[in-house]
Amino acid sequence: MTQRLMVHGGSPLEGEVRVSGAKNLVPKAMVAALLGQGISHLTNIPDIRDIHVVSGLLQLHGVTVHQDNSGLILDASHVKNANVEDIVGHAGSSRIPILFSGPLLHRLGHAFIPGLGGCDIGGRPTDFHFEVLRQFGATIENHPQGTYLVAPQRLRGTKIELPYPSVGATEQVLLTAVLAEGVTELRNAAIEPEIVDLICVLQKMGAIITRDADRTILITGVDELNGYNHRALPDRLEAASWACAALATKGDIYVRGARQLEMMTFLNTFRKVGGAFEVDDEGIRFWHPGGELKAIALETDVHPGFQTDWQQPLVVALTQATGLSVVHETVYESRLGFTGALNQMGAHIQLYSECLTGSPCRFERQNHTHSAVVSGPSKLTGGELHVPDLRGGFAYLIAALAAKGTSTLHGIDLINRGYENFMEKLRDLGADAEMITS
Ligand code: EPU
Image 1: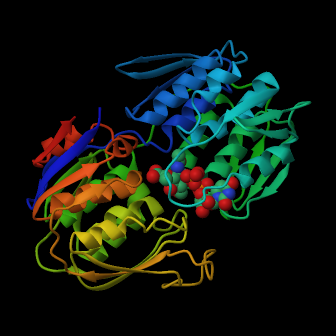
Image 2: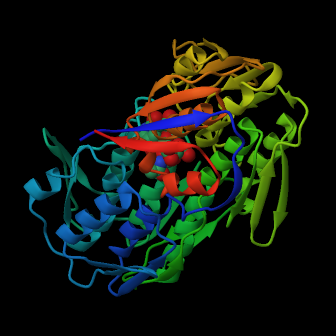
């Protein structure tokens, strides 16, 4: 059975949506529950695939996972070995399983991690993760079906300097250091809001974590952690996606639950392009104020820079701006491939392997097309679109909604991975879109 989405575009999106809990925090907070002897309560859970993958893996390891209307209740009092074949059943489904490494090494002395999945937006290596785990004292063996890790004795705190402020590797260090013996000093850490929220979760559990101003995090290991009570922060990536949809369709969307603090860089960029927004205590209203949108130069970066996950939806809005916009993607080497299909819809986007804005990035002279020049405004017309990855998929959805005529989107399941109930939300905004199952 396959599904495709028919979108009849050309009308503004107007109305209100409620932003879900953060996709890039909730599954990690669920993994953190594995470290606690007691019961954890997590609320504001989005209904997306990673939640089901992590629930499945936790259950295989003896954690009881109960979901009701208020959220998740996780009891990790009786952690046990899982059958490797059952773990392998989750291979290729997500990137989160690698974060089970530290918690399982602490609870069981060994861990088996299946092959990872995740969006195809670059090589997505795991070298930082395994190097970090080795530094804590784990031994690591690669097997055809996954990776087997052993902690011959209690893991020990260590000094780590990440080659790049990777979100996943920073989470790996946090989830491992909190129960390791002694102090861990992590330099060049990622400081995304979802990481800070994970630190809040761990502190509630009894961890001792200090953040310094210069991307340094100090963790003093403790002997035992408890459960936690936590409400996940809102998804700033989803909120920005709806903001871009408002701009590209000349619409007006109130995103209930969106917060200014985690979106400051996005809001500045949105304003530079010519979008209007208004913040109140309950959310943020985003709209196209009329007149021309302005071309900009944009460079993605780690937080507090312009988040890479905001780039793809914003590029669609930039096709409607007057002049030449320059976009330099510095976090993932292959996150601009989605633009080919936009060109078929009438956009004018040229890709380059040079670093086109600011200072040279890690991908300089490596032949990755990681810069784009977007020439606008372009009249978009409906097209046949194959969703390449999560954010690229939402970008296509925005393009289809902004375009004149009908578009067909294939591979919608990838959008479901990060945008809870997006069909319902589209309906609330007056979109003319229908899911066809055949
Ligand atoms: N990197 C390495 N080696 C590693 C790990 C990372 O070279 O061992 C490199 C990556 O190849 C990439 C850069 O470091 O070039 C940054 O990767 P990072 O580890 O920060 O990304 P991640 O943890 O795999 C998370 C989010 C992504 C988001 C990035 C950046 C989750 C599940 N995923 O990925 O979200 O783009 O951080 O903020 O939290 C999305 O939501 O669509 C998405 C892809």
